[in-house]
Length: 300
Image 1: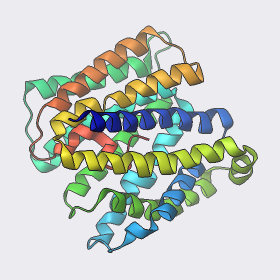
Image 2 (image 1 turned 180 degrees about the vertical axis):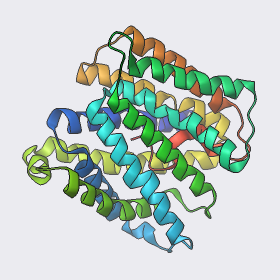
Image 3 (image 1 turned 90 degrees about the horizontal axis):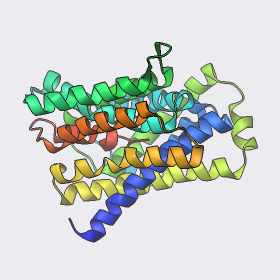
């Protein structure tokens, strides 16, 4: 990989990691309802990417179902999870999309795995369990359970994408945005209150965070990532994308003053080690499994 392209991937992972923390700040600290914030983001994506809606994809019904999985449902669970879990822990837990995608490629696409990837899957889940479960109170972080659900839904969307004729990355983003914002606004109307007043009253920092999520993450981040995928093998890119959760942990500690605990450090090392093992092993049926949710709407 050229140094220029490495810097581009470095910037993409930094943007993804920072956005996890910004989203946590918006929905938890400022109090913007998470479903409403997700709806605003997808509305912006749909508006900015209107030119990429053409030509119309041939399998529009399948794309609609995919959009519900990797768009509305995925982000509803993700943002509700971020409201109830620390960003640093969520950044690591979100990487379960990699082993979940691998397991789904086994179940639905006939992929076979050896003992190394099997061990990697067990490590990835074991590390997250260590982070999510408090042995002192025998409690489980509800927020991280939502994040796990988000990873599962996003991975299911990735499996369905494998059965659809491929389309460009920005065209996928455009149609996911178009199909996702109305269901999210509907969910927000049914389950949340004070959305508009809270969002407008929060002022320009929230509007800037929204613009960053739309332009920085959905357009720059995913557009640049698709460009790199076309140039380099999955086996080279996928381990490097583990910079994303590392940035998420760093930004969570620095910007949100989240505590550094032994469980977080040990669980992160165990889980990300497992993800790394899976990422560097070749998946013949679904190479994209090594990226988890990154080939859908992305990390956050």
